[in-house]
Image (cartoon, rainbow, N blue to C red; front, top):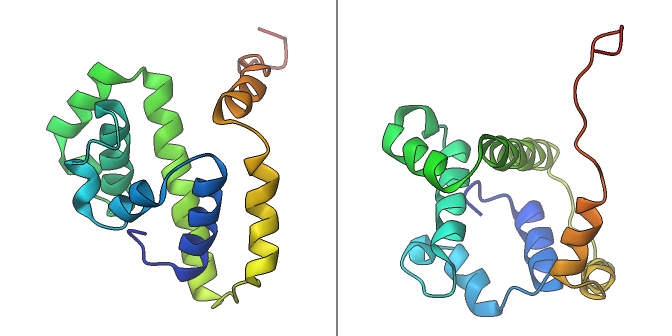
Length: 141
């Protein structure tokens, strides 16, 4: 939403509904209202604020925000939030550059419905099944 990519915003709204976000939460995310909303936890608001700073390329100049992130999240969490933000930004840039056409609402509802069959806890449980991968050199160390 920060990048105003119509294609990505449309898909993200559908996915958000699929994982259980309410219309009120989605509306709050379309403005700065999420920052003062009781619809999000303090931790969620902080992650959103960081993602927005990454998107606007302002994270490097906001030490106060970076310090709050380090208090609330592990280094790994900060890296994952930053990478997710960067990857979504890449998708935004590509879809905007190629003027990607939005699929039909019927198609998009199938996407939401596929995710909607799983709770957010189920999605998190699935992700937790993958063990942490350590980078090793060729000798196995």
